[in-house]
Image (cartoon, rainbow, N blue to C red; front, side):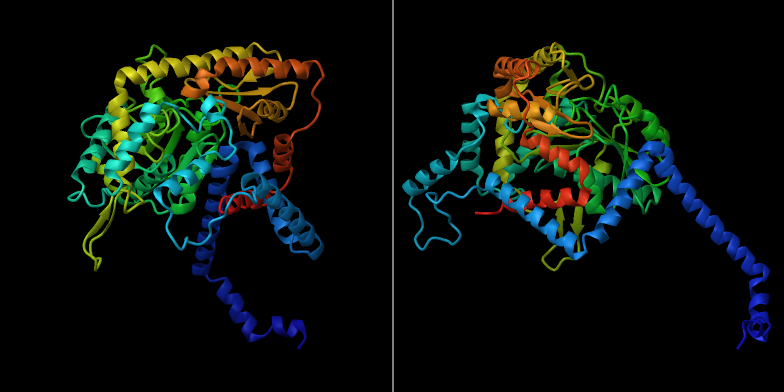
Length: 544
């Protein structure tokens, strides 16, 4: 049938009449308005928040990732990529899980259990595997004390409470009491009011996860928010990314001021919308040891009636005792009225055994949104305060024993020692003409870069001298974290860094090390490839 016949048919006339119906016009207008609203919302939460340069960069990354996703399905590209990723995975395995034919591999339970003497011998052999000399303070962070008394206290706590589980408080009342006392002591350090509530978790990541979950539930219950968003600077800990991924939340990363390295408050303000349930800032942040403007974030949180989480996981007891130790510190804790939650790792600068952190809330009502309960479970009424059900009472006991043994006087002493060493390292770095420090670090972390040499090459040269520094990216850098061991070795660190920089200036060092190659690769290939390599690293951890 000719097209002209179709266009003049009764059916076409009916369709035309239907399309010109005023009601349909109204529907079309509504659809257009909704579309326009979504476009404007997108512009508001991307273009106007991130700015033209960042939006362009993110769009380019997205399109590049999309193109690469389909390109790697081509046989020639897929085969080459598989070969390269296989090689990278093998290199990672050789480094992380080297195989020693002289060292037995236990992959099946022994027919006969080892005797106590045999086990002692095996444990000593495992502890003697080649490792970075953390005992000498040559690791940035990771190990926060080398005090034998504290280690012995932790061992005693484990012996006394190895079977304890706070899931059964009526069976283990001592552990219940110790956990409550640790929560009370740490909350007092951060100037919490009597209305505040806290919970002990397994570490900083779980503390952050719990806070995000609590604010999500609060936002849903109190404000009716079903698409919750978190706003945080790009320097916030990756645990917030994990929380957003786990709990179906959207994390909006805002830029930092390139000079102060603090969260850009204007960008935070522009990012706030009807779905925002939580702002987040660091005291101090992991990359640069810089404290965000918590007072400024608080004003925004109060104005918009939303939560504010202050991540003190790394700052820990150092930020809590800095003022009493004679160091000037901006307000960051519950004395700031808009702060609704604070996370603090007791297993960092609290020097407790690994596996303990505290999440604090400004009110017990907010803390309740963290809890989980299953009142109709056939096994009985079930409720737990955090992600874990059963928890190791021995770690709670070890944490309690550590805090009670050190006391305020001990923490003030170590605070002076640790922050004092960080200040000394910072001054030494700033005295080297080719290096500069990022921002104004407040406590124990000093991050730096070079305006002349590849900072990763500098880091590799320090590695050859036995130092293990933490590599940073976006922007490039490394950082030195002052702990009790590394503070003790700070003079050695300064001397080695001065010698390394002198060798660079004299032209004695020209090769590119493995760290520079790895981060150079990460900056040029799609993020999905970097994720593949990162997953290969995690896989390698589980190779016997």
